[in-house]
Length: 80
Length: 432
Image (cartoon, rainbow over all chains, first blue to last red; front, side, top):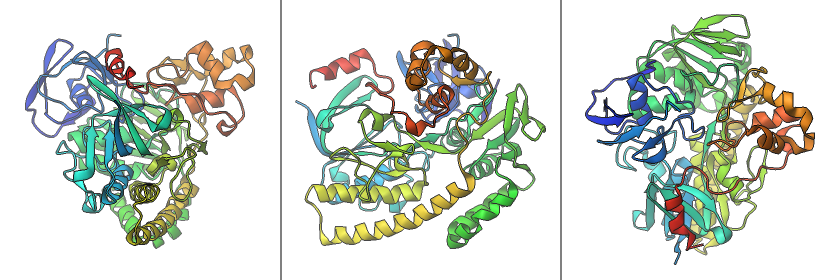
């Protein structure tokens, strides 16, 4: 289920659940995850509901408040 | 040894930035923290840039960067005695002492549970707007913007500009009641122009007034009017509510769902001020002027008040009164729904723990009404998930009792707020 599409080209790679995916530096991590089509766990988008909590480089993190940096390693927790 | 600053401001949106402009201008060493990676809050969300780049001049006017320590990606997880505040960012945590604390944590989307609001593809209007503004994405497929409140108009307009197929716009308020806004709009020409620009941007969108959401089903949105609208992405908004978690943690008096402040923005706790939408939702310009007032009040407490401060204070107070009048006319027209207005027994109230209204009703015979939300928490785990009740407190409280939330004692909130690792907190234990 792909909910959103980018208007600008991607310029980096991040790792999501062991797979390399294209992303854009500075977009929100939630945006990068939504464009993969394999993740749709966004509700409030402003850090209140915790629906979008993922593990980023080993630490629990809200995807909506985080911006994409090259080489991020994300466990989307979608199998839990 | 605990680090000390003159002023600590939590929240770098319109209110926090304006407060920092006044405190630094008055020579006070100020730390400004925000969980996001850039300043400006929800309203000035923008593509990734330098923290202060792209913010309007009037918001930054007067900020003395020499006296400002801006810490982004940093959230407050605790408020302790003597205004010591626990701060954390990934990998590090510390406790900062301050003479004055300004809480400017803003507002969040009002949670309005309805059948299907926890389905994938249902996204809060504010969250969707942030995706568009910060990340340059647009929703795909057939988009519906639904709920109530003036905020839905700019969201729908911005989604269209971003290229989204906004097919339907559903506003619970009947069309004829929009006329109630006319007097306020005539007094605020800028807002009137804004309204006209939204009407232009929404040309061609099917408008449904006076209808509420009955249920979101896979691919179909059922309205109270009986209409059934196909959807791929559903943007929901029912207004905003103050974000009170830090205020509750600090033990501040709360009234009517907002931090109680006097006309100097001082809270019930000495040395603690609150500014912006945590004191009542009224938009970014009102938040900015409240930030100025709070910053000036802090300067007065610190003995830095000058004749010029007095002039600025009087002018800001007048502006605040004018903006409050406009905000109140909006509230009078749009009005909030009761927390369970759209919920059915099958509706999830506590999203974190998956507890429905029916679950609560079925077990309510096991507790006394006075035990209220606490009993529901103990028995059903409502409010024990990661959001700590931010999304369900109002609804669960309504579900356990017919009494209004105002009659209930404020829930106890304990540190840490948000996500902090044991390692990070361990570093700070010594300071406490």
